Length: 465
Ligand SMILES: [Zn+2]
Image (cartoon, rainbow, N blue to C red):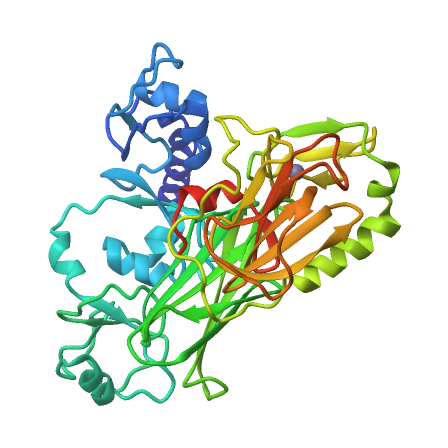
């Protein structure tokens, strides 16, 4: 009895003593290499600790002096050692695939990241990892395979060009003749890193990740067999088109006012158009804020902010710009639709707007150019799908560039085109004016992708896809 009491007492002392042991400066524990732009507050937030704990653990004299490249001991992870890094989870990556890629057991990864639901990582999620110390090149020469229902080990071996006994599971505890669907298998000498997506997908990419309010998101899939791809982002159907027989691309605008957070991105592969469903995969993707500003415009005609007028016009335009035609008319980056631009624009895309002392209910759906009576040039070739006079847009033209990409030109003084006309890059389609919801002559230029207005500057600066 006495011995037992003494043992219990020891346990209590140990438990009481443990929390205090980390107060003194640590000599061991994992380190994080400070990156340019890091602050102690941001580092503390990522690793679930406090600025005070970081200062104590590292004997920091001046917390405002943080030098990139400097190694910080991260308190609270005493059971592990090494260099901690942050990895942003890619679309299709799961705990199993990351565990394989970084050589860390899945449960350690889950514990390290305090994951509440390890089975549901989202694309764009920052994950704490320990940098690999062993030789990683050998590991990455292998690839990972997710068997489907009905797959036998022999079939998988034939398909991957290896022997059935060479296919190993991640745990590598046993080599069985049967495979369990969804259990990752390591394929020795595999050519591609296939993440955790099922066999027909060689790679999947979402760019940018996280997706950004008001920006164009590119979803690309590379298949290793012919097929037909469909998908959706939350409640929006993605317009997938083949770039060649194995590459599929969908371009989708993210609404400038979309609530930042997680949105389900689903991809489905069919044997052929209208054929049998081969597989479906869904993973949440993070959408982050676009960091847009605010502006007030207090002298527009009352009619142009009347919901009874604006509503039907918006509905008409949304319907007009929703089809995705399979021919892609543009090639390379778009050109500016006006020669009259400088380093500054009257108004840029995404700015939250208040009209006539109202709330910031609107946002700027395009890019504005100076000029009066100057020519409007086509930024890329396409087919004219609308010309006419509207209350908000004034004299307007819309051009279909294919794949669900459209451009629009508002407040025109003159319209030179008609619906159905095919226009080439650089062609003059009208003259700049001040018709519609405008406080003076200017060109308002819009680009819509997948039924959503996006930042047109991206299309001048980047090449899609
Ligand atoms: Zn504008």
